[in-house]
Image 1: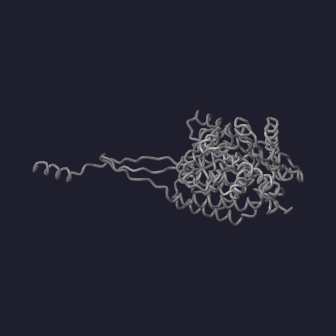
Image 2: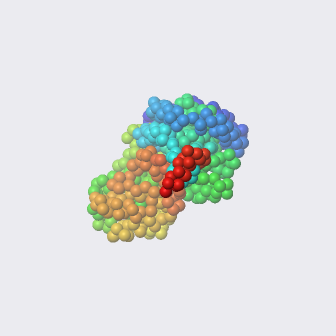
Image 3: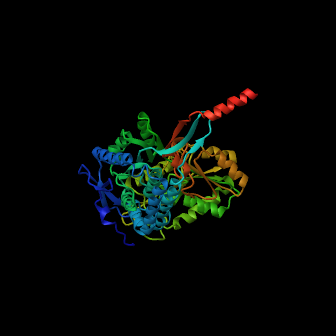
Length: 504
């Protein structure tokens, strides 16, 4: 095992409020567990309602002071670019923090998570310099124009599976637009957020602009969403929690964007490049140990390819490197929590008991005491089964056969989710046709999980609403103000017009 250590300030962490470490008003703390061996690696405060009030007050004061909200987009961009540079400079240490906290393979934490976070700050910095309005030509005797303004205090609530990336997509864009933030990360995986909080302050984000409170969602999340000084809520998490928070936000007429659960279908047509399709299928459902809301846990295969695909998956999956996330060759690490592993095991057992065939995998593994689960393939699962219809959120793949393009589309769209989808085909016309018909916020063709800060993602149906990344997200963190300035009549112009009228 490669030795990995946490920075000392994370081992007994505090909240980050008003640009500094801030103790909780309560004395309860939450242990942070390394899922690779279930050892306690840190503890964080179990935040209180009073802590949330303190953080929101700091954010509100900072917003009203204008040291961030009223400076130019170019000045904000300079700070965000310094933050991105610091992320790159401290990439190795930050990747270790994310790996220990979540169980991510270190190679992915470095190449994907940290790199994506840095790129997102860089892209948001570019957009910060383009927040301009427009002059509107109207028949009014006035000069009319629009301008974009920040909203105020943004409440950001983020999940356990991609804590660094999914925090960054909210923080970078909200900051770029001139907002202030109160962030509540998942209680299980808060460490990278605490690491980045210090980076943001050192990069020049003014005190009070970014604040972080750790703790349980039930205790402080609802209070944050309904706080009277919060102007917007940005949430990523389960569809059930998202619906509840949307109801709370709606009572207070508070805008909310929600990136929620997913259960994407990966459609493999008979004309696909089979070797590429197999590689894509595996990466789509084992990436991040299957804890990926845009993963591909449902494989739909045209019937002629069904048996070859099953045989290939059964042969390949036992050889995908699974184990210690600190090893650079590891592809599949542990799941993040014991609760999540129990949920995965229960879903697999329920499917098998209902008649599904276990092609490979299906077992929890206790390597070094860690929370591992074998990559698992199930076939013979009815489309109405819970294993197909609901999000398992682990390295589990259900396989269904189809005969026609229309049937594939119907199966793909048959769940309540609509976050992502995939199409594997060499027929470009089919690729466009099927992508257009799929009910999903993002569709990958002959690939999976290709993401970029310039490309928005988000869901339809029970997968939420609103978009993260791209100019679309920046718009959601601003509002439009119209300014109409009445113009005095031009006496000379009036006289000229009168004279012209007399001549006519």
